[in-house]
Amino acid sequence: MSRKEHHFKAGDSVRVKPNVQDPDFGDEISGWVGRIIEIENESILIQWDSLTLASIPVSIINQCEQDGLDWSRMNLYLTEVRHIKPRDSLDDVERTLERLQSEHLWDGIGEEGSRIQKVLQNVDPDDEWCCI
Image: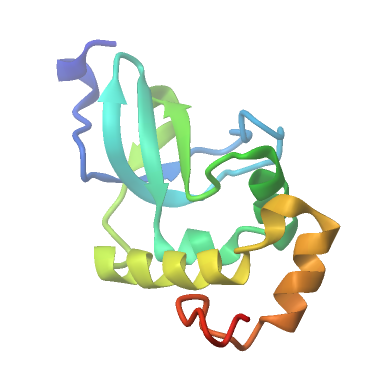
């Protein structure tokens, strides 16, 4: 399928088609929605929208953080998505992403990170004096 045949462009909102699995973990991701960030040949990079980000299971985010994977984006094939109208704004995505990143700030170091996160859960991570 050539670029002209698929009619996708950066910024388009897309929904993952039925029976599509996460290429890293094999979990079902049918119905996930995001915006195309980049198209390269038959592959696209998708930034998940705020509603999809908010619905990603905590266990998946934890695993991605520990494995050094970006859970807010995913590469898929053009054949695995279809166009839809946007469900949110880019500001919604940014706010949701900031909240989730703050909640999962320490996940990358495993069990110790979970304990640190519990202690610091109500502390602004940008406030260095409160974190001491």
